[in-house]
Length: 479
Image (tube, rainbow, N blue to C red):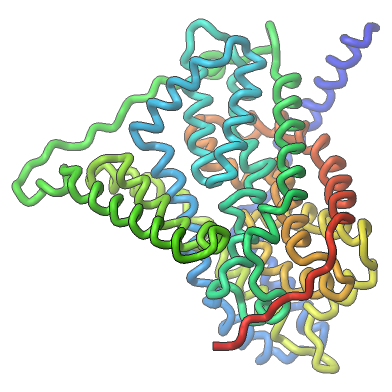
């Protein structure tokens, strides 16, 4: 058997294992909300085992449930604003032009992966919809036969590879926003702006390596010849039918169909942004989650042209935010039980976990263990970054104890947080709705990415972590 045929057989074997894993996941994995509920119960039981009283655990649960209401809304708005921008007419025209660029099937797949990851550095919600629409546009081409499953998996690589290393990173945004940080976490870490997390040269290098790796894997794993399954082969209609906005029926609707208000709101946003950039450090402005969301929301309004078209897009985007709205309060409750329900000796579960991670010691070993822990937990608790609310109190405390750079610890979490998305299909749901596919159609390709990504990520967090010095946290005064 030649080396080429051996490699082909190996790829088929990996794909076969991945398809079985996808089938098992679809059959046995409960909804992510159910997993989050189970997590609350597990944490509560652990608190009881630690010696906490039932009243203390119940108080921590109830009092902490709404601790992160503002952050929950902000994360839901990341998805909504990304969807609205991606479905605007100017972006749709851009997607059609980009779809004409690739010349071969393999290049088309790697091209989608590259653009999906690039867009995810701006907004992961935008990446999902943008990547899905680009995959559909390429699938509509009559001069190019491309595997639709591989295109869909490539469109998911933004969320499966580098989204948490970009501007919409939940953990980095949370750490940079004092008003969104839980008080217990703020006392440990202080505020960490983007200059200490996603904009460090180490994070940028790590991001670049992962993007290159993902594009190469996407290119060489794209089916060729008779193995290709097009959208037509799979019975998927990729010809979009634009939703028509109903005509104006009464005088009172005139402003709803006018471009005047969106233009004025856009000018106000530009004026505010210019004022911020002239009055504050650039990193402070860029790290502002509220400012980030304001710009994206107004951008979506301007790109849609009229309030009526904008609101129509918003109504389509709202269902994609449901998981965040109902899950994040449970993460907040878990974090409260971990950090506030004191047991024997006045210690909490968070403190015990911090002691465990501290016992690992400093250096590369600590970085690798934190990354692996994040991956394993993320397989069972898909959160899009909300899991950081649960992990951060004890992970950051142990990071301080072993004098690991706190900003790099956030990035260890961020790069590892994306990996479970390549296995657990929870965050594929918005993309699958666009593609009209099932999770098992994509997981064979994303699981292959996971096999290569995991060892590379572990090596990167180990090696790059050695270049950091420990910087003691600056705790802001209590208002």
